[in-house]
Length: 337
Image 1 (cartoon, helix red, strand yellow):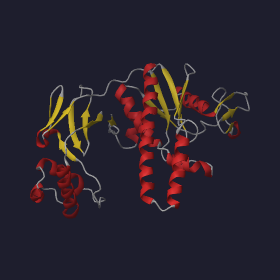
Image 2 (image 1 turned 60 degrees about the horizontal axis):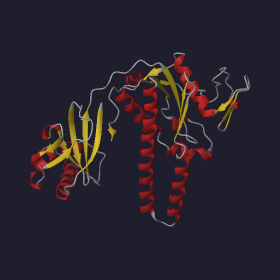
Image 3 (image 1 turned 90 degrees about the vertical axis):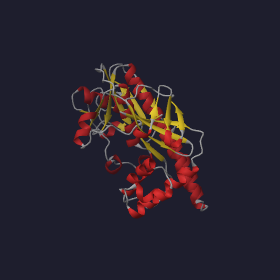
Image 4 (image 1 turned 90 degrees about the horizontal axis):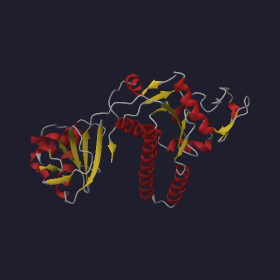
């Protein structure tokens, strides 16, 4: 398991970053992997090698907007209290979990250093409860229903308002021709979305860990291509990052040994979680009213219980099995702390 920690440094690396950008541009033009070819630029060969490997092999990159100084593990020294990078004469405090197996690399930017560490994955506990998770484009982004206790967790209600707010701001700026501001606003929205997804995933995993529960998610691969939604809901579907939220839930779950499984999403919104009756007319907006047993429930809560029930019935796929079927057994992207 790889986690990445963000640490603020107080040194000025403007000169080194400028040289690194020249090395990257040379790598794109010449496609060279030898640090001898960029020795005249004056950047430390250890850092130059990393930049050449990154940009010389990537044939899709044409321009360099921002760059970081990448230091591999062999150029890093550390003790229980601090990390030292001799080639940059930089010392960073270790204000995070000390139990890492090794430091893979460090990327140094203008203000922050990004320390990538490998940790041993904790053993997954044996689940005693099941939490079904329904993800949405309207209302609450995530609704978690515990089929054993009946407890419901609703998270991310502010997200729909957030997207509408920034959509209107960008629309007004586009009318005025202020396209550079449009990009800044979009980047700000992305940062807020990422932070909210972090908080949502953290809360869900903590709830599962406290109750020794398994998290059951819908397999929403290609949901943006296959979902049938109304025209006014299309913007919300394309705006919210289901994949980003799923990745965050996955790596946080791995960090704390919380098991995850997946079920197929068909009919989870139309099926009654009490009697199992399926009818497209059962759901109207956020209200679910079963035509057979007359149960009335919040539609997202009902869907969460259905997702948990599908796992309970054995119609599921574990996270590791999903990775193998997709041709990948790698761990998800590291957590940014």
